Image 1 (spheres, rainbow, N blue to C red):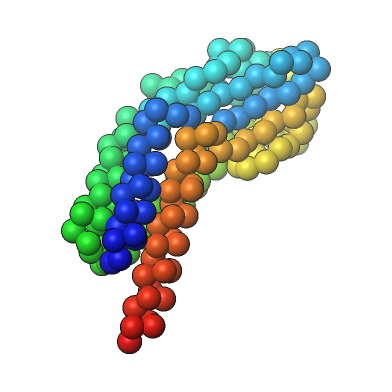
Image 2 (tube, rainbow, N blue to C red):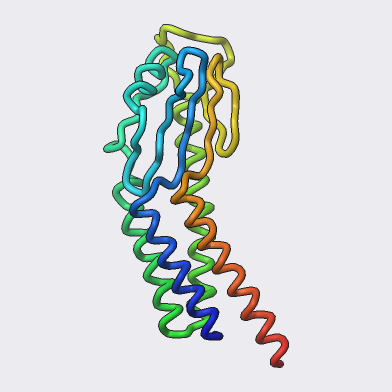
Length: 190
């Protein structure tokens, strides 16, 4: 790999470290009775924000309480992410295109698995409702959108990357650009 490529890979691993210090995703709820809105920030190892208020509202429509300790993801994600970052760092230090390609494949698999897991988490919470709930609307589910906004009764629910998720996404894009650049360079040299 070119020295510039190795430096960019090193930079992307440093950027990915932000996942340990910044929230990766956020869910916001806007409604007339909450003009300041309610939010949950999803981190690598937990959830912060207005979780208790949201749990209180969810109770009325029969949704389960969101309890961080019940998510195995928050226990294993810091380790998985550490392995991913270490793999990228080793690829840069060893100057290994093969390891760089393996790293990119792992990042893609991790991203897809993360979105699928998040979708099923949202689906479970939005569809598996307590039949004894105080508020029941026939045929209504309360699954927030995976990305974007969705109207849920009088709440507008939004789901999108937080600052840590944006930084990690940019770091992943850098990896893709480096691989394309190195591939094009190799083609030209042949």
